[in-house]
Length: 108
Length: 120
Image (cartoon, rainbow over the protein chains, first blue to last red):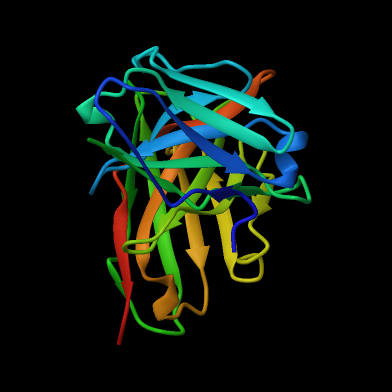
């Protein structure tokens, strides 16, 4: 089982704000990165590190971290943001990587 | 524009070895880390391991005894070998580039993924 835990599913009304969380002990020491995956497509990096958004990613995606929890916030969710979202970071040993369990975001 | 492309057999028999290659175009192998990640149908992502330009590797402990990664800089390729496969290894396999910065890291480029089915 993953050492990074995410809520299985969240929903958000069009134009509203949603926060996706990722919990794990390793997050007290290491940054998370976040990936968006739409059906039958490869994941896309949407946020990583302390405050890094890859070029081409809308600024409605932002990340934060506190204690053992990392968060990805979508401010003003759009229909195209409906997807699965995965966090990624180090495992509890700090030596290896692990993905979160994934969160399905539905835009209503 | 950096592109990654996985290649290899789509069908592997149980107990045999799965072999995949990722070809990197539009950019150099250095100075990045290169990972393999897989995803069984309907399930989440699973990191398999990574390799650096120097040849140093880091494997998921869940696979460590079965997985070997290698790099061919002359061909801008890196490879995955997984031995003794079972049906549980059936998944879409992705290769990905990891950009590492002082402020964090992320898999910024991915291949399209290749489905590997383990079946007799």
